[in-house]
Length: 276
Image (cartoon, rainbow, N blue to C red):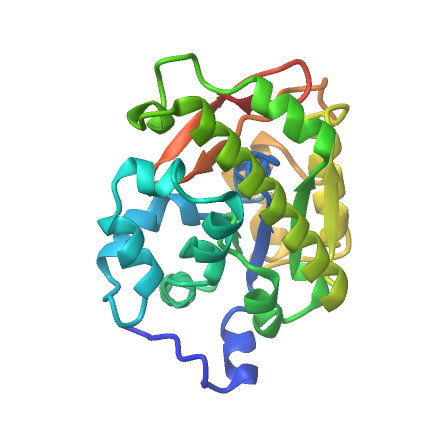
């Protein structure tokens, strides 16, 4: 198995990942939906980092992921009720980049053809930038405060979800919402400082709108990737939907927010699906 070493030659890593496109950002901004759309329409491989959190947790040790293993040892109130949102932000293992090397190892094991789109909140800007073959290979989706408030109002049915396993679900929800707000702000500040590309996601956007903005950020109108034009025209994906992407009626964005190593499904709204 190819292993990721932060001290490895940066040029070699960029070359090994030049076929990878990265979609990071705040929770609930539509990362999963847009990545799946790109993968389906362009014949790419989709790598959803939320889906492998459990596997990655099992592949770590307390020495290389101390915050993760402290989190695992906590009960539900310790995780979501008793600590401040600021402490939750500063000590949440994925926000600190623990396990990021496992994402890179997974990507290095994938074939270089076709392209890969990888998505998830774990794709922290300062960790991704050194791996980029080109600036247009990454974008971060940032939900606006209005979207975030709408998302909070649309959370899961009372009595359902992991926060209901705490002694104070309402406080747990408030803490989680504030932690996620601060995380989105941190990603915004970091992408600005590193001059990386972002898309602001608000409640007026449709899936089509967001897909177009991500496609523009990736400069996909100008790029060919892994599959030659001739091979692409002969592929089943092209016969279903040849590029450029066909326009569609406004559709919902279905998304999820991964918290405990599993995804919590979000309910749909008129424009963008909100968290249940």
